[in-house]
Length: 120
Image (tube, rainbow, N blue to C red; front, side, top):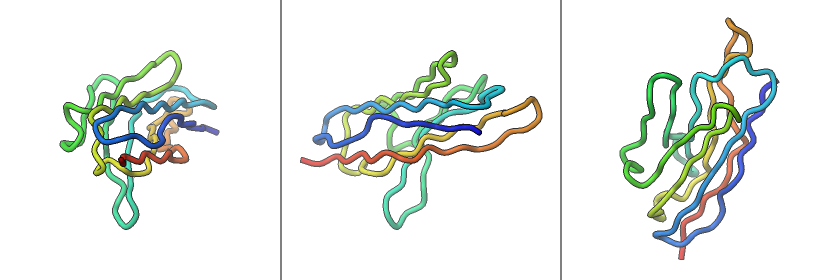
């Protein structure tokens, strides 16, 4: 069993900042990728930022220069620092991880989601 537990999120004014964190726990052999997706009602879940072991990071064009993803490998934790937030960033943010539970078995895992609301 693997669990992703998110923290952070909430209400922030436009132009403000917010941080998210996500810790993976359970039967983990290695973590290939960790990142964040977001979803608004009626739309598909979209990539926000992803960090891959040995392959760098990538961001959605809409968040480049404003959001920063980082990862603590020792703690199996990924962070998302969000600056210059815009109402368009309002969504449920989901933590994502691609995890090997053994050397050969792997799976995609999701957190429970955390609401981020940008509003004055």
